[in-house]
Image 1 (cartoon, helix red, strand yellow):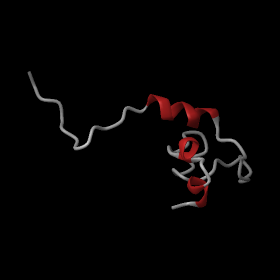
Image 2 (cartoon, rainbow, N blue to C red):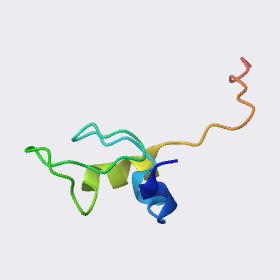
Image 3 (cartoon, rainbow, N blue to C red):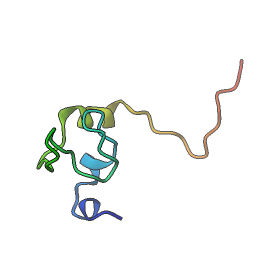
Image 4 (cartoon, rainbow, N blue to C red):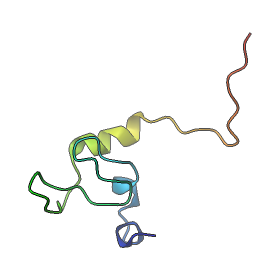
Length: 63
């Protein structure tokens, strides 16, 4: 598990960043490649828009 997830940042870094394309668990980067202290706002927004997949996944049944 990445160190960033162990330090309590799992909620911020759980999703991939649509702006800088940082992988889940990795910090966001600036255009020059430096690590940012705060994630991009668009990364935080993606966490609230994704619907959780029920487990086990069952496709919708036709009616």
